[in-house]
Length: 210
Image (cartoon, rainbow, N blue to C red):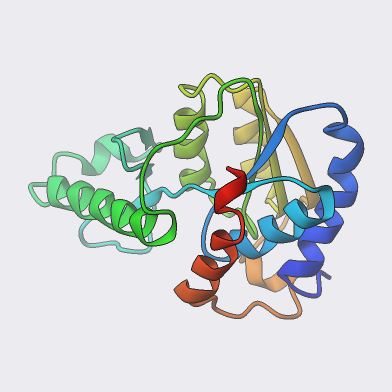
């Protein structure tokens, strides 16, 4: 059992320390909870912290069912059931809506979409992964950024999702890889909602180092 997101970040930092030795790294967190984890990793390992966002794309009548995900610049991860729903006349509006939400959050958290990861090892982190749709979209996005290496560091990832993401050929560092999985929160003693302002405050400490 993980106590909270800070505890998760410290545990991941211990696992990452030997893996990243001698590498030029940056921690890239997925808000909101991932920023708490990422901040702990960055502080423990003396690394810069930045943020990236993608949003799940869901069928118009099934708002909880992710069939893909999108980034601010139209990088899309297509899930297994994408073609089943993509012909729905409302579907285009869903894509536009989610892209706008991504852009709004990025502007709130970092003020621009200028990223430079050239020749860096990116440690992508969140407070846990379920289906992996948003992470897959971000991994596709990172593949276009001339990074040296990608490490996915997450406290919790179900075994089936772990096997899917392994196909990207990246290093995955996790605390829990359960065969049986209901939700990320079941692996935490404390799993509170994180307000936007806390994320903004954390990221502001790192602005000069990015």
